[in-house]
Length: 117
Length: 118
Image (cartoon, rainbow over all chains, first blue to last red; front, top):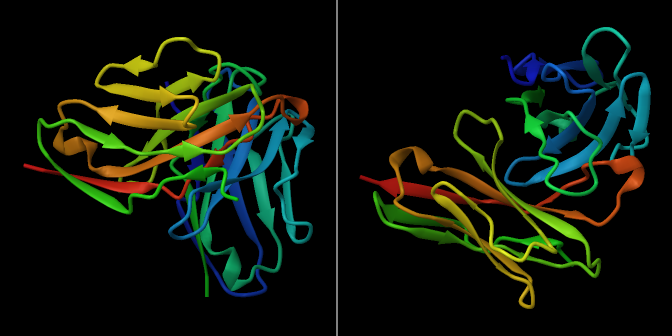
């Protein structure tokens, strides 16, 4: 019973390159979230997706960041033209239910650590 | 103002002793949820315990319990009988009321590091 799978675990990019982070939710989970953790900080919400739909992107930077969760395949967080400030751990989480109330618990992946040189 | 405050930068505890990790929160919404997550050195986020704002009883999960003091807006995590494997970062998080599209939009504190000594 695999949990939330994220890859790559570590990614190094030079400034200006693109970073693609992938997330496969737990089996049976159709709700996917991306969070970002800067060094010495807690996690910050970025985006919430269901299959083929972005539901809440209120935490996404306005430029260079995009996310998708296609009908088939993993969810992708894409960062174009990376800058040093993008260096962080990016966590994906999934849940079986729509959240917003009650003890709907997110299951997190192990994170993808992006380093921008 | 910070929504979630964890003021303890780090704590040390002896194995088998109990330890309390502090968390205060700030919200004007009457409906909210409070979560604690553990992040060991390997990096993953592990859910520990949940408390709803309308729950009458303090939440408990095995060796974890939540000391929920609503009037003081605090949700301290108590770990009984500490084990070496409890050494990790601990994060308190809150979900406020109804969210856009049913989103699990959690607000996390900065965390605190617990070290359990043998």
